[in-house]
Length: 243
Ligand code: NDP
Image (cartoon, rainbow, N blue to C red; front, side):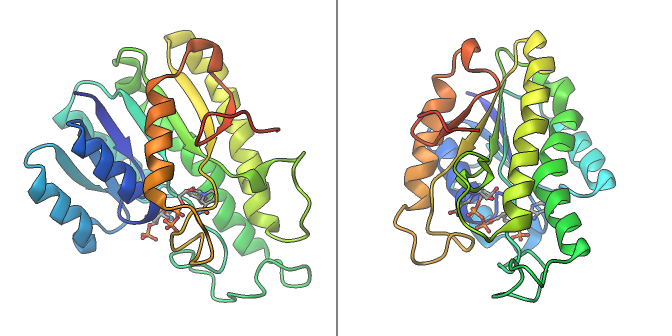
């Protein structure tokens, strides 16, 4: 049985990852900004008695991070897998940015939006991983999986939109690749994963890929990681993504 911590576990890909890790018998620490209202997580907790721990976590809050760490450390002496899944896209549910359709176009770009997106998508995963490092180091060959995006690839970038989002994912890639180099000394393998264009609140109804399929792929590649893959950027199917 592995112990897995997942951020943004209450909906979308995070919820699917939580469901699938529970179904195969692992222990999941499901972190959400508002766990009290996370009805699907509560139902999963009832179905998998004793193996799901719900905890409040806002990845942009140092106090929240410290409290979440205390809660997890009280329940386990190690973590095998950390999934940095929480993320926002300006103008989508949960982002808190009102200007839905035009928020990402030249002329409407705002400092506050950029900081919110960078705080959540780039700095968040770095500080979550830093916070949980003692428990990750206590695991055997622990893995850190951070959800990136093809939109964060400098080489693949072609569209003149998603300014803050694309830049935040590129920044996250650099943060987590740097962390991979340091944490690799402790035997921790860290990767960045593009989950594909998924049908979630963020991906929208036009996306073809069910989050469940992407989650299945991410779990499979995480299980099969080798030390040589530390610091790499790959798709949910394990194919390399250009930086
Ligand atoms: P969703 O919008 O469906 O879910 C996002 C999750 O992140 C929610 O649980 C949300 O919580 C949580 N979250 C947002 N901000 C914070 C925060 N400050 N602290 C803690 N949790 C937070 O997204 P997806 O499931 O579609 O995406 C998952 C990941 O995959 C993201 O990192 C995304 O950028 C990435 N990705 C998604 C793609 C897609 O097509 N959907 C494509 C490429 C990458 P709350 O409910 O409280 O808002």
